[in-house]
Amino acid sequence: MSPVTTLSAEQAARADATLARLNFELPPGRVAQTGAEPRDAARLMVVGEAVTHHIFRDLPGLLRPGDLLVFNESRVIPARVMARKPVDAAGHGGGQVEVLLLREEDRPDLAGHGPHLWSAYLKPARRAGNELWLGDGEHRQRARVVAQLEDGARILAFDHDIGPHLDHIGRLPLPPYIDPGSSDDTWRERYQTVYARAPGSVAAPTAGLHFTPELLAALDAAGVQRTTVTLHVGAGTFKPVTGPVAEHTMHAERYSVTPGAAQAINRARAAGRRVIAVGTTTVRTLESAWDGTQVRAGEGDTRIFITPGTPVNVPDLLITNLHLPGSTLLLLVAAFAGEDRIQAAYDAALRGEYRFYSLGDATLLQNKR
Image 1 (tube, one colour):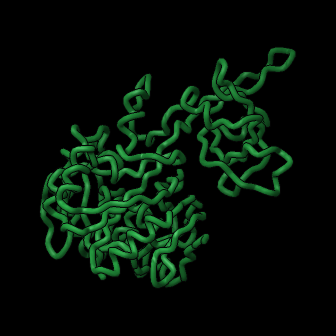
Image 2: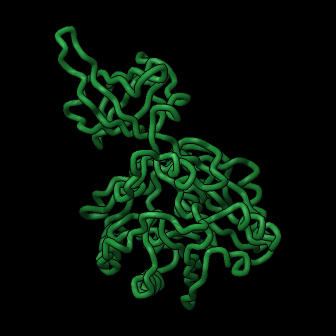
């Protein structure tokens, strides 16, 4: 399964109009720099026929016994690594290059370069050269630049599997508006969900950052069920729409749905129990695995682009943070909940001092279907 959504001219025009109508001025101070402490102390806006205001830890009282929460259990990897160019016999070279590893690549056309291939953004890319040394000391790793992708990313071929070394030489790829400080030790805990298991994301599935072990236990006690899927969040997820929507490229992201998860979701739907997606990445996974009648187990790459007019078939509710204007995520929530409800919710958030984006407050949206 490798779903791709190509927008028709009519869909693209509708998406352009939606972004224009939902455009808003966001004061810089409203972009959260730190998460709420404790995590479940963040605010939660419930958006349905009316808009109501809560604290995230109120969630068990807002859900029903038998509801099924679906989490994305992907784990953020320390994908930002400082590298240096090699130094030649004359002492030239050694310039520093910042590497943002995106994902492991399966490229049969590049099989001659070995099995350890990664796509990556390099900064500065044009002066990076053809060979880089990532990290220092015993975990230092050599990479060769062997190809370039359409979006400017490079394919790096490593001599060895770099995965086991990233904890030693890499840092978490925090959003650019967050100051990581001199060490990311704190962020290695705070920029992960408490249930993260499968390494592979270069950005956190941030709706899940509000959950604590205590809240999960309270949800269990309330009879709320849960299952997990995986979508490894890529750097393109948060790429703003800078021109016409028809020209926006959705980057491929790898997802998987286990047979157990598919069975749990399909059983809930068949029994009339609500399916609640935790985060837009979970929505994109579920809709990518939807075959028209049920969620199918499997894995693949998805470029699915959910915009107003696109039916969202699987989840009944969506937990998600407040998104930035001009983003594909804003289009997704408008498709899910309806433009009028999103307009009302964001007006209320701006009036009510809600905090936006990855570390900000949350919403619980009802599917408009």
